[in-house]
View 1 (cartoon, one colour):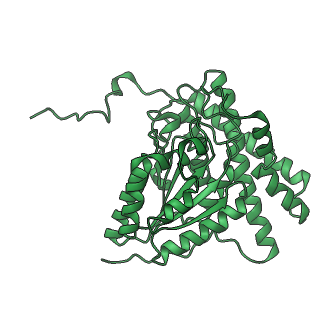
View 2: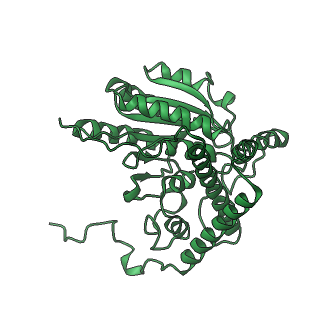
View 3: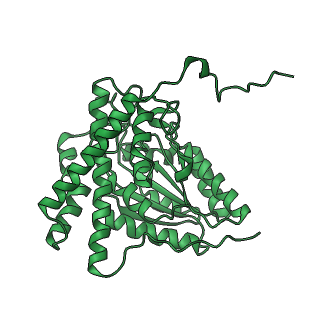
Length: 340
C-alpha cells in the first residue's frame, strides 16, 4: 500500500497571545453561529416554514466546535440526526443547510434529505443518519477503506449515548479495535437519549470505561468546555494518526431544548435544566475571554450582528430556492435504463 503525504495541519492554535485570542474568537463565533442558526430554525419550524422532524443542538455547541477544530480538511465526518451543528462547524455552507431544511433543490442534499440527512461531499461531511447508531458502522467502513487504500485520513463519528445500547455500537467498536482503524468515536452523552435517563437505560453508565473494554483508548471529557473538547480531540486525532488505533471520547453535555420539536420534554426536572444552562459553553468561553482581555462588548455585538445577517441571507435564499420539479421525483430512486 502507498501512503499519501498529508499536508501540515493549519488549524492548531499557536502559543503566543495574539494567536490564542484569535483562535478563541473563532471558536466562540462558530458556537454562536450554531446557536443562532438553531434558534432561528425553531422559529421557522413554529411558522411551518420547516417541516418534518427537527432536532436542535442548543447547548451542545462546544462538542462540534471543539472536535471539528482538531480535524484536518480531508478528514471525514459521520453524524446523527442532530447534525446541523456538525455541518456548520465543518464549513458546509449555511445557505445550503437552510435550503435543505426548507426542502429546496438548492439544499446540500437537493432538498431530499431534510434536517436528518445533511450531506456535503466537498466538505467530506458524509452525512446525518436518522437511525440511532446507524452511522457508527458506516464510519468503520470508511476507515477500513482508508486503511486499505493507504489514505492518511481520520473519520470522526458522532452519536449519542443512547446508541451505546445498540448492537452495532459493540460490533463496530470491536472491529475498529481489532483492525486498528483510524476512527474517532465521539459519544455526545446528553444524559437522556430520546427521553430515558442514562441510569435507566444502561447497567453501566461509564461509557468510556465500556469502550475501553474493546481495547480502544477512551477518555471522559467535559463537553460543555470547548477548550477541553478541542484538547482531548487533538490528542485523540494525533494518537490515531500516529498509528494508535481508534480512540473514544465520552463528551458529557446537555441539550437545553427537548429531544425534538415534537417532544413535550416532561421527563426532565426544570431545575436541572436551568442548572445546566448555567454552564452554557458560549457564556463560559466569553467569560474567560473577557477576563483575559480578549473580548469586548463591542466585538461581541459586531459578531452577533454579522451572524444575524448571514442567517437572514440563508433564510431568504432558502425561501427563494426552487422545489424539485415533479417530473424529477424518481431521479436517484431508480435507474432510467430499461430493464433487460
